[in-house]
Length: 67
Image (cartoon, rainbow, N blue to C red; front, top):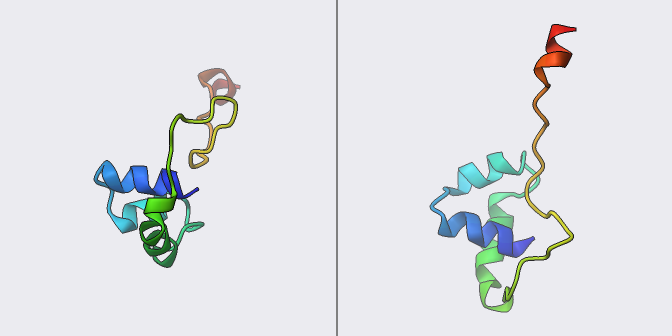
């Protein structure tokens, strides 16, 4: 999603950081395209029932590690 990449850039992440956050699913070319269409990506309010952030692996619980 374009607005997530733009938000990451606004927070100061480098292009390499963003590629890493997305596990390579967003390329530097994709970041450049997001910047090119930034004026079209207008966000009034984040979607409330849809988590669109980069996926992260869940940390294993201490109970699962002990088992």
